[in-house]
Image (cartoon, rainbow over the protein chains, first blue to last red):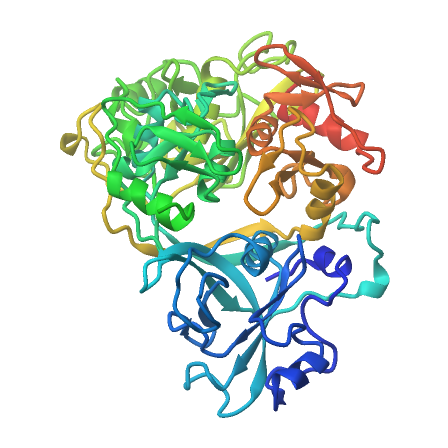
Length: 306
Length: 306
């Protein structure tokens, strides 16, 4: 796992490891954690840089929905509670620490994890706090909380290999030197098996025309589009690899759909851009029936629109 | 390797394995090969379906530039010779069999390989012809032939696992059933190590604005673009992972650039669409110097423009 050294040089607060603080270091109090430069705010769970990445999270059981599996953490975002650790009374939004965690996800920027004694007993210290190393935000989605309003849930995975980050060698704004002879590497990934005939069929039915913006990319041997799963395959969405769960989209609209910028309204025929409010008609084909449950899943879980 | 069963059902001639013809089956003549339904044309090296994929290739040493490594074949496309197996007098073009091979590459459609005695002695039969199984077109690029004009070179890789293709179970045009609970699989791939700080820098210098079309994709936490290598990393292009070899592009323009539809003209500042002839000014930033050698490499090898 290569971290993103460029991020680490341009922010006023340190991202990644703190020199001299080993994984497993115990702390008696939040104030000690703060003085060690691990986590700046005295109370808040997320330390973040405005318009930038998050730096650290303190996990201490403030959200009953949090789940700790050791190397994987399902963490609930901030906001919308009537009091700290209290009842969820309002939807959480992509602002402040939540925004920063999504920024960190997009930029593969590591988060320092500090566990407090209030968390899952299997992985938390008996008392005080403990620095537990770096995690990456792997994924995020919206969910209805037990009390109704939406919360944002983040999946964080522990990382063990670190890139060499040496701030003294680079200054902000200068082009990184890169690599004139980049090496080959072998990477094993786990993914969901897709049946290419499913997306081929969807793309063909629409003649490679994007169902959102109407563009058809013309190549030298035909046309090009992508098959976009509405309800994502695998964790956490568990969508089906079936034609009713796919859209024919251009690569640009595919990115915006996966990021929850574009979603399909409850009429199942209007495409909404959540950032600028723009609405368009979804381009439909009668042979291609769409799964309303999958559309509702995407709208809620990915776009956060209830 | 999952083949693409949907392709195999809608063409008038069989794609993939021919029932009853085992790998290694010898044939005395091209006519015998034809009667076995392995390769239709009596003379031409590529058998293909108009506006569709290629079905088969006979490799028999017609091009001196062909290279045979057994499970990998570097095959030269058709056209532009003064006589069969003769001197290259004109550029090869993305038409007929060459177009079909690129179509097969884009659709991951398998090619039957028949080796004749005229090919590389290490891998070819001593006399007659031999059916050597299925290969996928992995890549293609343009190259100057020894005599000057451009040829198209295709890299084909042998495939050993076959998808179950059962034409009787599906009819053309009906939606494939897909999979309601797609399985997880572990895949190991070999790729070139990229330094994310290199593309991050390029994207940041351009504020995520596409250098070709000027679009900036707006997400919920900022903006989005991709870093596109001009001279591709790894085989066959061996480009550098350096900022001068990257462009900031939107995903749509990235696809068209990688497919050689868009290229940068010799003035290093005009973007040309080879399909519709459209020209635009490349959006430049003085801090981001581009490598003219990499641009010329892409123009020649990917777009086929000398």
